[in-house]
Length: 230
Image 1: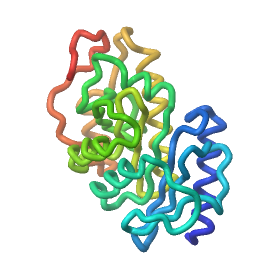
Image 2: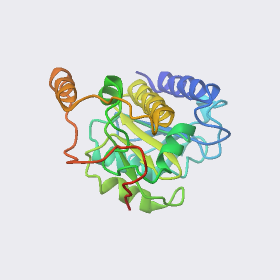
Image 3: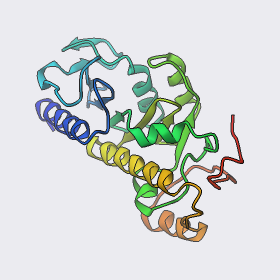
Image 4: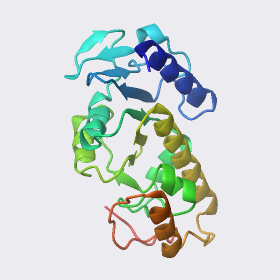
């Protein structure tokens, strides 16, 4: 895909996310990695609903601005996901309401922020890690992502929002949307003792679709807040 087409695609997906209320105001950012190792990135303080393709930030492989407006301050966050996921070609970071709410609940397991609720959550986004709160743009966020050692393509930043890597922009957007909808389901069903997918059903999905989830061991998703995690 040409750079011009990529610019249009970024703006098209960004506007769709904004118009559906998945990231308000000037929040959220998107990047796409180019064949030369550089990136196209949404600018800082720019609404995803009103992007100008010509003003997207073009960075070289070292992160230096080549053209366009100044890039989002979340560049270290995007860079850490590309660094730990060599196949990733796009990263989407939103401030979507249900994902942010999920990240603030005391019972959430940092190794598996959501239980296996639906097959498409596991196929497109999950499992999802939760990393501690850091100030937006703080390089420590990138260090936390690197600490996951590439085991997760979808991550919740505590009190902040989701960040998801994908093989292309469409995949990253779809995974982010699936994460948001699953967070919404979790909040709707919290305390109602819902049926999650069984270990056998999860194993069948992993085998059939070639999924390689991280080894997260035993974890609790009772949804009652009894189990707390640092």
